[in-house]
Image (tube, rainbow, N blue to C red; front, side, top):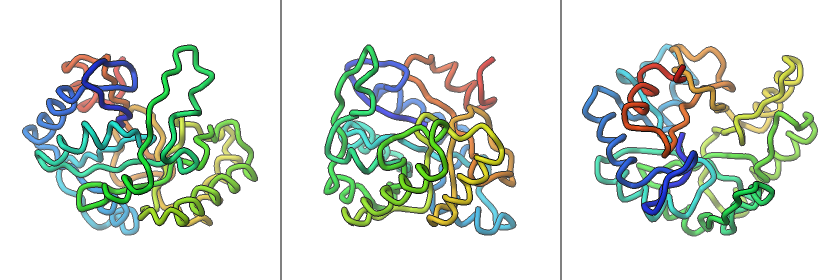
Length: 236
């Protein structure tokens, strides 16, 4: 799970192009197979089908403009497919959901035309809620409304979305009954896969298609830490 790519600095959400290039090169030279979101969707529909050995999915949250400027050229080098999760209310704007953070810095987000120009055999677009809300603190009616807005906005912008969703902040309802209601709402909206953070390796077959772990890749991590995360998941 990546967010931003910027040559000028690193932080918890930002890697440099050099870090991204080194990390992707490591995957390619150490027996990992980078798959597409459509590959994973096909596997999810029939888990008797096969994925390649040591499959890895590359994702970027929030659709930052720097993904186009700095990530895409590196993805093309190998080439490496990736998925961008889009909060549709903010397309062409900035990361306004972060405004209350003490260290807020406005970062430009991709426009609808830029997003459509990105889609190819390398890049898939998927859902990241409409208003980047935390589903952990949202009741089922609010989740249904957000999913409806998310899909409608994507349709109005003619964005070619795949039926996968990443929870903003990794948040899902805590109580089992409420989480099941969320999953039912997502299925009713046509969503087939839901991604949390989790920082754990997903065993195959996938146990819960709406609770798939991702590994949080931070610019503040050393390359050694990256390699340990890829092998073991959460660092202890």
